Image (tube, rainbow, N blue to C red):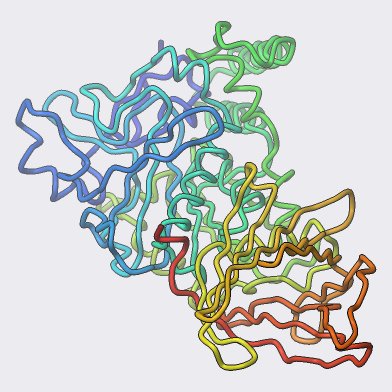
Length: 507
């Protein structure tokens, strides 16, 4: 194996062109570890999440328990904490723990310091089969080989977001998914599939396939004279043969290339553009001009595609540094990490999410946005009686349940679900009756209008709701109202405001 020097840090990839994967994580004392680890770096004791300012948590994924860790401004999360903005950090590639100690030095997979986000909750996720702390930077477990792929990382991130929102810890107006390197390949899919994400940021991103990065970086080495042309062209030829072999058995967890299973490679060979094209949320791109791990051109392609699609809410920046936001100058290394972070946070403040895009056409889009209501809300009903709304996701996220309760009546229930191309809301009253509504259109102000889709018999002088409106405004206030058809005479009731009190039930 060839040894490559990268800013005085020695890494050993399987061959030169695998920098993006096998360098993956900078093996020096980074970010929050720079100070916090000094007290433990030379000791033999394990480093716990609490030592690093994180509170360990677990949540259930589709088929397993996901382990993750949350810090609030550099302190372990207080389970009774007030809702705050959330950043979910998705680190780069490799079978690495979040924190490790090798040769007396402590390293981390986390590029940023949780204290750089003093007003935010900061969450990170352990890889399958790997603990928060290990005594080695590279830990290959059987579980890791069987599970690690793009889909696992996306589903784990979605589960963590859902768990934190359901526990009432998240200010839904600012939920940032921040990916670096491989994490930037994961981030757009999480933002696309999770209704809770308001902003997405990708640092050292690649919009084209990882296969392109390997080939493009190899050709740059050839042109720079770092690699013999004949040898380099042979490597490119061999890589293409390897790619064909990987896609001949893309689900294999036993066949390896560059020490990683085919399953992992085939999943991350999917172009990120497939997700970026579909996103309608604010996007931040931080491309590294001197990147030798991800081809900068692959990152700029994302910007060009967003321009072609006439998307407006994105910012793309080119930084004069390498993959880890370090610039090698005659005077020494210059770190750009905090400059990037400052630019990112200022952009978020200037680019509020469309909370929510409930006026978007299409039942599927409307249902995704309705999921953002998960949590508890309080207000008053038409008679100024205190009222509470509670929303929860059931049946694996395919059903949104709304529970309404006032202090003078029993609970009633409305269940939202997709049925073919329609969004249906079925109401179950405390008296045992049932009403069915269907989404018909957005109203002025972006609220959704549901109208009755079933003919119920009227009793003389009785009333039944023939429609209702629901939606959030730009300040995150929920508006909910009904229109009663009282004995044939429509009576419009204006939507009433509800404010969020938790991200989920405290039951």
